[in-house]
Image (cartoon, rainbow, N blue to C red; front, side, top):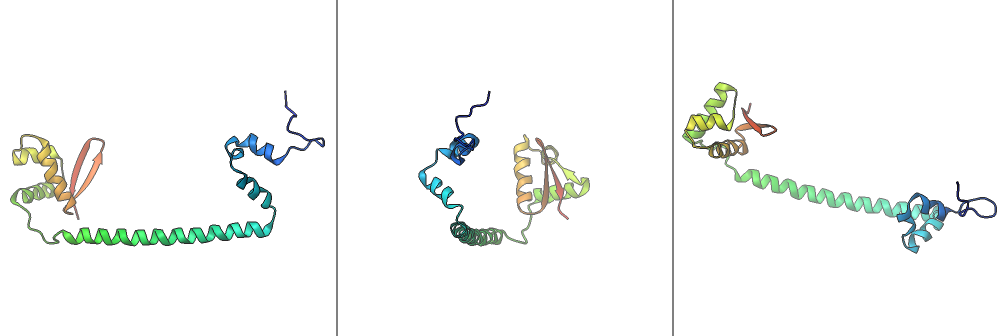
Length: 150
């Protein structure tokens, strides 16, 4: 059965009642929203709101550009701290040779190659080579494979 409580004598439903049915949270907002709703029929008011929105978006974009430029500077500083032509240790050279020979390696391969007791040390060594830009890293679930960087 349909309730006709929200209709006036002409059968029309008020805007406030429609809004309260569609979104009860919206209808609970302050009187400011109701005033804006009433003023929304005024084109001058709508254009002022749109102008304010454009200005806020411009300010947001300006802030995002500043944040992005600071982020890029930080990345450049971090990259600048790493030596470009570093000499690899004998163990790292063995790993790189193994990667070039096999095409790919896992921590278990390096564990056997270097005679480590567990895979943690091998994983750390592979990660350092990856972070140094010497290897590519591919993760498939728990399995991590390292490839030569071309």
